[in-house]
Length: 90
Image (cartoon, rainbow, N blue to C red; front, side, top):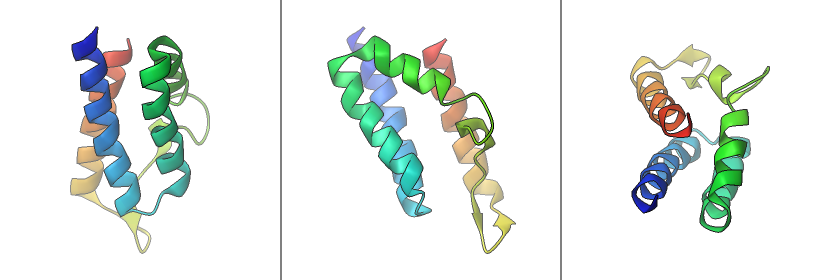
């Protein structure tokens, strides 16, 4: 269980860094809260992370862009982290 939590923390920390780089305050705040929640109640945090993947405007819909142009490398990295996160949650 400890390794699983550490892996999740690592992925979330990388996502937070990406959110900070692109000034995505909403996502940065939400995932910082998830990181804290993961320490106190891992099962609830995992549930909250899972539901962030669904619905309109969800984490799945997030595309990184600069000046209206989608950034291929950065979005590939985001997708890699998103896939790793989801794999740890299912």
